[in-house]
Image (cartoon, rainbow, N blue to C red; front, side):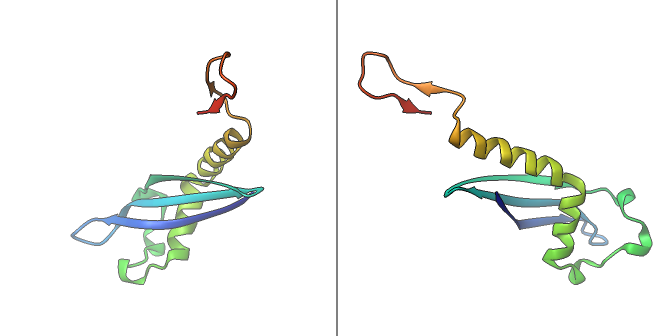
Length: 105
């Protein structure tokens, strides 16, 4: 399964530019099927020592992706794996038995 995460937006404090929220979108592709999820990761200052502080204007997408991986990477992967599995083996089907075909939800 191929996974890609992109940063959609950042929320920071006005006074010192400390990033407190990261809005992201993630895509997974497997055997020609793709799914997408989006979410928010909440960051706290205590997670990163002050000597490692990076000013807002010096942040790169790679740095923020690293933060996301450390805070929510496992959860994002689990959600994508479940969603892509549901495309191959849907948990629910719709239809009535006297119709010729059943439709996936």
